[in-house]
Length: 268
Image (cartoon, rainbow, N blue to C red):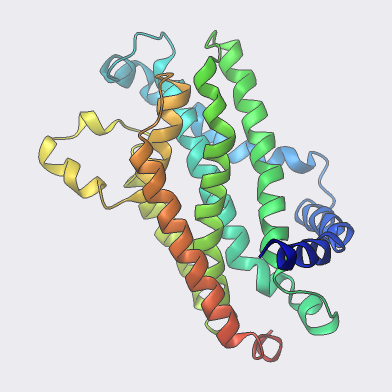
């Protein structure tokens, strides 16, 4: 098996410059003629944090459990927004990657399996920029990192993998049914409010808590909140569940791609 894996690894490695160039071009295209460039990827989540903090901070800070931090609510909010933004950014990149790279798919002979790598790389750069900005805000608020922050690289990779695996499945469907690209953002809006980010789950009546068990993104944002605000280990079985869901969607995406790969160019 190892002997077979080595030639495959070399084959993928031979395309490293192409992948790097594609990621750079993707970022340039997204922020073309923009003076702030990548900073615009930070504006929306940070603006939401600012708005909700100004409106709800005094109301909700005292109701967050297991913390006495003065700025508990904005840190709770930013932690959840970090997980949500990574997930949704990767999902939307996967959703649009095939249509956005349509000309490349039709005209250039290259391994189309590199498209998820390009989407993952682009989402990772945006996520790293957002994480850096939020860490700076945490330090400004006097909330210093501890050893539990070592979980963050793994959580970030898990959030991107989960979002991208789902996005790729719907991205393939979007090639044939373009309404999907319009419907997914609407679904994400509902999902955002069904995820304890702006509010804490403990604030809701206990009889509603069971419904949130069906929302895997709630477990993802809770993991970020555990590590950043409460400075404790996330629930490991939640991480196993999220990884399992991501693996299922990855397999489904790969299966659908193998079934429709010869028809992609005709529909782009």
